[in-house]
Amino acid sequence: MVFSNLPALEKRFRLTGNGSEYTLRPIAVPVPNESLTLNGLLCTPAHRSGYYHDTVYTKERIVLHFTAGGLSGDMSTLTRQDYHVSVPFVIARDGTIYQLFSAKFWSGNLGGDALGNAANNQDKRTIGIEISNYGPLTPKPDGLQTIYGDTYCTLTQPDAFQKIPAPFRGQSNYATFTDEQYDSLIVLLRYLTTQYGIPRQFIPEPKRYLTTPDVLTFKGIVSHINYRASGKWDLGPAFNWSRVLTGVKAAAFTPKQSRDFELIEGPVLTSEEAMIPLLPQARSAAWEDEPYNDTEVRPVDVPEAVSESTQSGVIININK
Image 1 (cartoon, rainbow, N blue to C red):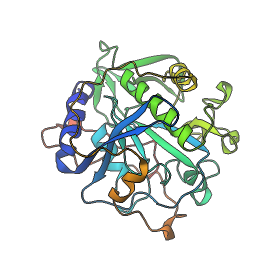
Image 2 (image 1 turned 120 degrees about the vertical axis):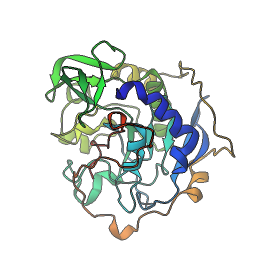
Image 3 (image 1 turned 180 degrees about the vertical axis):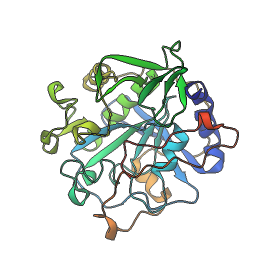
Image 4 (image 1 turned 90 degrees about the vertical axis):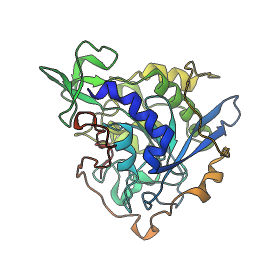
């Protein structure tokens, strides 16, 4: 059962860097002008690079995604060698924020056929955040199934899934997000909006679940479906938008969740600038405008002790 295995898989990733596949370094970056700190882990693969560009463009929007997978597969897909499809931030179910590169840099996160994304123009001006989550689930006799054919949970595990009142893009059942993820997302959004001068506003509710050209001129926080008319479900109505809006727009915010997990030892990084010398080599700027497509692959770097039924899924909401 995939859902039951997720905590152990995430703990292994956090404590071992997924078996030393990644180097993890603690982050504690103050949120400007607030009594709030962005805590997380800088995550750099030991033997891969070229998954982001270190050219800098003015950021206009933050784009929210879910990964449609589990953490190990998510991170593997986002750090493929010499393939500029990634995001600077991934939020695990336990609330850990993993940072892959500085948010002032960029990588593909919307898809070559996203609105206005010719020559990756929108990718360059957006900051992508991926929330680790399996997304839509299909009812089967033994429970709910992931897009990969694994049984995610039974129907007697209400904390694992949410059934929305009306189907969204043909799907009614979705994997739940955790309280820890909501809290971490709010802190991250408060940091990014201040640090990069992005307004703390969300695309208006009547257009929140629509693909609309308005996204190209909107300044603020949007989601993947605002750019993609089909094949994507992130982030639809099976997400607590009200909780995030309230937390981001509040005069002050204090996370409610107590995150009781082991801290990584080592020097603490207190700014994004301090992270840059530790990043793997960026992809050449000569490839900035290179198109990319939606080819899907299932990750192969799964821990040996994990069976087929608990493998982490590959990201489908970032287009390869």
